Length: 499
Image 1: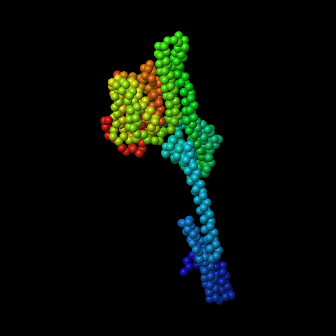
Image 2 (image 1 turned 180 degrees about the vertical axis):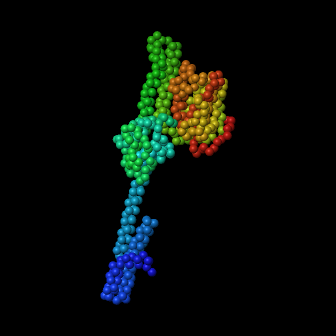
Image 3 (image 1 turned 135 degrees about the vertical axis):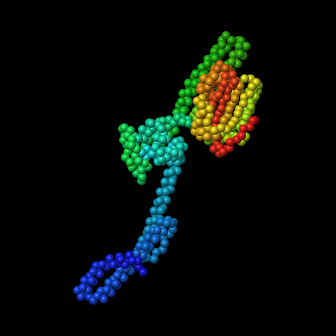
């Protein structure tokens, strides 16, 4: 039985004919029975015709529905007329073409996403209200995962950069500038702020009610956006500073040994030309001075290389006990010459730390070597290793460590204790400065260059660690290094043992 809506539609279509038949019956032009029969026959024909087209439309609708539910399915066979089957086939072909184009566009979008994510330089897209709507992996690593969906000022607190972003959003041309991020290690960036036009389907947030002066804030729903690209120029700036510092330090520190060498050479070529005893004595002094210059140049070059990579944290893992065993073995003869005993205290199952093996070896070498130099003869130098959280005792009390070594993050602490004369508290904050010496004459006599603790400080800065110094005059000093535990080993907190 045809649907009621088909009968109603047929009746509406035949309304003029039915009206004409009614007039003919009224004027006696046609018999009522014949008129009724003709009306019913016409209504039946109209219903059949409408039902035929209804089935055709329904077949097309079923085809479109099936293609929408399963894009990969073949178009269903239709029992409709020839034009309907042709229309169904055309819809299926159009669907396949659009599906291929959609796949191509999706592949291009995924490729663009991968390219942006793989960019070495941080990339940030900022909306009209200064909300960050996009940040690649480099940007999230620099500013944190929470940068997305927040005001740029919450992550990048640099007035010059924020002013440039507001200016470009307000209609200014692209801007380039340099700025620095001071923590955890100072890094220099060149930032390019460029306009980007795009109509967002929905604004990320309401426009901010702010007016920074020259450039008014954009209207809500504006298509204006900006792209920030940051290029790390820390290595370039450090290289420039390294050359300047090397020249300044070398010219200052090499002046004395060079003057001594020139004086001894003139003496040997003049008054002491025939004095063999003076030759032997002066040549020994000249050898010591030349060796000191070589050590100084090596330490300056080492420090420069460390400073050049200080902003790039290491990615490897290091076994602290293995490095300490190696350092103690290499310094055993030096300690024995002063009748000093090296003692290691370490826990069982000590977790590895994040670090560069060669640089951490240099840290331990410098600290243990200094302890051997300045402790009293016949005493002990103790290296105590422990696991602690991210809070250490500094000059101003309890100090949380920077970066991953924050409060609650496990750290490996390596404390080197000597039994020397100790250091007055007023000297402690300056011990890691270049060429700073508490007793310059004694340091030079022992072969020191004044750069050992500066090297330690910069290596620990790169490792996002910390150096603390405790000392008591007449008792001794303790230099403690804190290093972040590798993420894979954070769960284990070992018990202490006496080695």
